[in-house]
Image 1 (tube, rainbow over the protein chains, first blue to last red):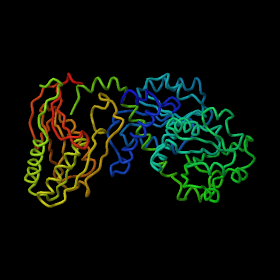
Image 2 (image 1 turned 45 degrees about the vertical axis):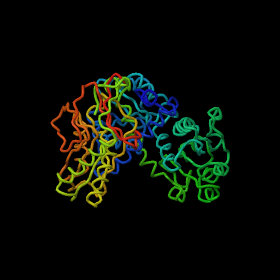
Image 3 (image 1 turned 90 degrees about the horizontal axis):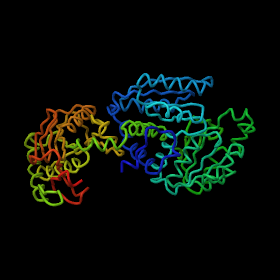
Length: 322
Length: 184
C-alpha cells in the first residue's frame, strides 16, 4: 500500500526505514535490472530532472553506478567532485546547499567524509537528497544492493545468517547492512580484530565472532569489507600480513564451511589482504553481481524518490485511468 | 446500475466469443500469421494477448510469439500519479520485434496515453514492419489521435465510471464490468 512504502523526501540511511519500505525498493529494483540488458539502455521516466552528484570524497564505483542509474532513467546529471579532506564541513556545505537550491536542481547524491552530512543537506534544501556514504554513518544504497544480491541468490533474507568481516568500527557499509538485514529478519554477526569492533555492537542484536573460522562455520553469507590501509598506520592492526593470516578469507578457510557460502565484497578489494583472489574469483563469489545490482537498486531509489508523495499522487490518480 | 455499483457488461461466454472474433480479425487484417507477434500491455493486456495467441494457434496451427510490455517508465504523468513501487515485467516476444507485425493488446483503450507510451517504448526496442492496436473495450474519451484497429466492444460510459476487465489469472473469472465511482 502506498502509505506504508513511501520513502519520504530523502534516503539518508536504512536505520529509519521499515521492512515494507526496504522491500518496496528491492521489488522496484527487480524490473530495472532488465533495462540494463536492453540494446537501448534508457527509459524516459526521469526526463527533465536535474541531478547533482556531489562527491566530497573520492569514489569511482559508487559515483559511476549512480551516474549510470541516472542516465538510464534519462535524467540530466552534473558531477561535482571535491576530493580530499580540505573541504570545510559546516559552512562549506551550507553554501553548497544554497547554491544548488539557487540553480533549481531536483536531486542531490552526496558523499561526504562527515557523518551526518547528508542529513544536514537534506534539512536545508527542498531537493531530494540521497546519501552515497557519509563518514562512518551510513551507505544505504550499498546495503540495499547487498540485500538484493542475497535475495537473488538465496530467495529470501529472513533467517539467513550473514557475517560482516573486517573493520566494523569505521564502516558505514557495515552499519547500513546491520540495519537493513535485521529489519528484514536476517541473523547478523560481525567478525574482526577487537580494536575494529564497536564495543556496544551487541545492543544492535548482532553477535561477535573473534575468529573468522567460527564465523565461517556459522554463516550462510560472508560480507567481506575492504580494509582501509591507513588503519595500519594508525595502529588498529599490526600489519597487513598479520591481518590476512588471522582474518583473511582464504580458500583453505572457506573449504571447511559446512554449507555453500555466499561471498560478498563492496569493493574495491585488497586482494591478498581481506580476501584472497581464489575466493574473490571463485564459485562462491557474487561480487560482480553486486556491481550489476548496484545500478538497478540506485535506479529504483531515484525513481521512487522522484515520484513524490503518494498522498498527492492518489488525489491526482482519480482523474487518470486507462 | 446495480446497488453495489458494478454492472456486468460481458460475462465469460460473451468475452470468449468476442476474443474469438478478435483473433480471427487479427489474422484477417494481417493477411495470415506471417511475421505476427502479440505484445500485451501490463497487466491484463498480457493475459488477453496470451488468450488471443492461443485462439490463433488453434485456428491456424502456427505458433504465435507473445511478449509483455510495462509502460510505467514511459508514462507522461509520473509526477501526477506517483511512482508505482512495482513496475511489471517487459519481455519481448521470442524473435524480437524487428520486421514483425506487432499487435499491441490492451484491455481498455481510453485517453490513448497508454498506447502512446507503448509506441514510444516499442520504438526503443526496434523497428517493427507494422504495428496494430487491439483492445477488448473502447470506451471513447481519447486525448490523443490514436485509434485501435480491432475492438471487442465499444462502450459509452461516464467520466466517473471505470471499465474493469477481469481475467482468471488475476481476478478468478473472465468478465467485463462497469464500476461507478461511488463504489471506491
